Image (cartoon, rainbow, N blue to C red; front, side, top):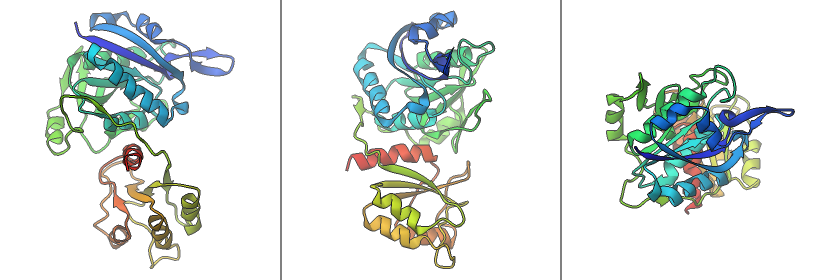
Amino acid sequence: MKKILLIATGGTIASVQTEKGMMPGLDGEGLIEHVPALREICHIDTLELMKLDSTNIQPEHWVKMARTVEDQYDKYDGFVISHGTDTMAFTSSALYYMLENLNKPVIITGSQLSLTEEGSDAPDNLITAFTAAAKGRPGVYLAFYGRLIQGNTVKKLHTEAFYAFKSINAPEVAELKDGVLKFNPEYDKYLEENPHPSTGDKLRIRDKMDTRVVVVDLVPGYKNEYIRALVDAGCRGMVLNLFGSGGIPGVESPGNLLPAIDYAISKGVKIVGATQCINDGVHMDRYEVGITALKHGVISGGMLTSEAMVARLMLELGEK
């Protein structure tokens, strides 16, 4: 049997009812004890890394997770990280970029209902996660609702539904049917054009991050002063969620934001353009409002989610 390490971080999956509301209470062993079928999939050890609601997860916690994988790397065939759903897309994106030369599976999972609640989705998600980890396909993935999703394409679309997560602008990796993990051939085609971070003989952890990154949703009437204020407050990276295919109000608009863009870039701020739409990415080379933004120094985020852009931008700025 494959040897898999469960790295427990808290989240809804581990929560119990308290006088303050639902809070993480179960440890890793508690999670496994509630789902005996997991022991039939692989040999499981557990490590209690933290016990946090994922709302409280910060970049320094991503570093702890990555370093734990590094520290335990030679002892296990794969890893499962139990995690809250609210910031799961950020964590899965961050680990996707932080774990280079990864030749083992790192599977992130959680649930919409606590493992202690009747009708919880947690057992099925844990079974999917450990089945994927035992399968051995290298990479960082999310296991949820019987699906496997590449780490940097994850987005949470529902606050309560069990099918909470979707793969954005990429095929799903695999689906668990009747206990068998069936890989999607369309995903293999996707990988040919979008390969994982470099794969070599030795795992490399990218853990230098500059967290002075903000996400800005543009709205009609947005002011230059708002962007300038963020720059003056010390922002070093900015993900701008733009309109549609990727446009910034320019000289034809009374809300022209190009002066603020020029100011930010003159101060060394790196600006990446995303879209407020869920699917299809940005195409800033299509319309004049996007082309002009590119000429002023905004970088197209392409098909990435804003969560993936945040993680990648923090790492790029931290490694400068």
